Length: 112
Image (cartoon, rainbow, N blue to C red):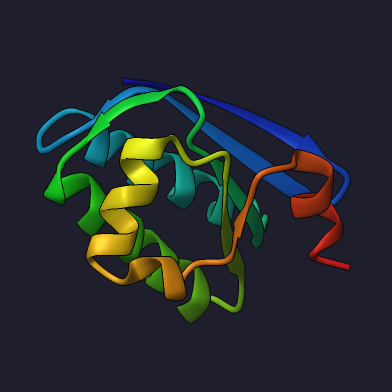
């Protein structure tokens, strides 16, 4: 997995590309979030549109990142869930924990 990171004003968008699975994408996602927090970027959107697969470790990492961001006074929201990821978050009832958006501009505006 690789990640793209872009800043839009005070909001940072992290785009994982590929699989978020144990030993592959989970660590890279955490590193991307930690790097943003290290630069005092605390308004984060994780755009999952290009994530082809996520296992339970990936879900756990999303929750871990969400908690880390919240504990440091920030907010993390999700954007563009694929059907598989949406189903996974609904089954685990995590869809009620995360703020989820379909539109990037809407997600960015939600921080205002």
